[in-house]
Picture 1 (tube, rainbow, N blue to C red):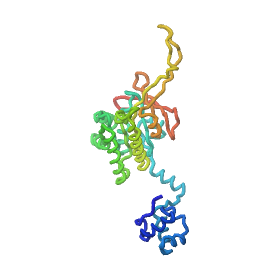
Picture 2: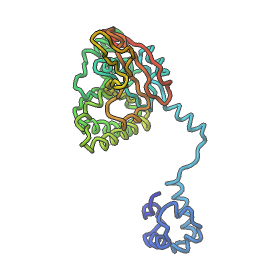
Picture 3: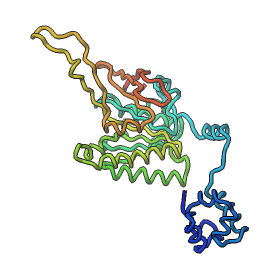
Picture 4: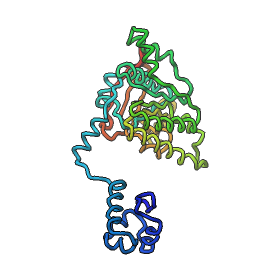
Length: 327
């Protein structure tokens, strides 16, 4: 609890603080736990001033109890689902992206992560009329691709233009630029609540690989600062944040098939371990982690729930990637 200062109450003088300090009464908690008559004797203040001091401290610095039902109803009024516009994907998510949560979409290169994000951003801006911040760290955002997706959904040129204006693209190529943008957005949300409902970061490893390594001790500190800022924006302003992450496939050495001769191989199936980038420290940051993979050589992609606080682990859905976007 905060230490006593003269700015907390007009009756609290510097001399009174020094007198209280001599009896080891330094903080607001110490004052509220002590007997008022004893405080008056120690601080040399009038008893009326002590009563005023206690009431002021209680009003300005102490929380007041609330009924659980009131807190729950307030939370429901602020939370909402943002449908992705992809039927099977929304069914997997239980209705869409829940505001106040951090989602991660991970997969190997070429698995369809970018196409999924572009389609989600387009549908949220078109159908929900919500502003979407798209953070492009690879500097390869395609406005033409978004326009082509919109043309298959909406024939009106004016609506297409207004929808594209709701997708605000920010290009960053370093950690400092990414952090500065998110910090600026946090301040903007404090002044204009609800100005943004979804943030897509595509992709996070692009700005972190230069800091990763056994001999670079700054990486965890930078990752912690960014994670704290992302969590704050999501939880305090009820924004749904979608982060794209890379993943690599590792084959366990013990389970790999052993070749006995040129024409014969062991029939055991190797165990493949999926390892998202950014290491074990980042693993607890997303509320939900989704793994996307290509099914053979087709346009079909499989999305599996790897980790979630509210979805069933191992549940999955199939989507398809085409010129019209993701369906």
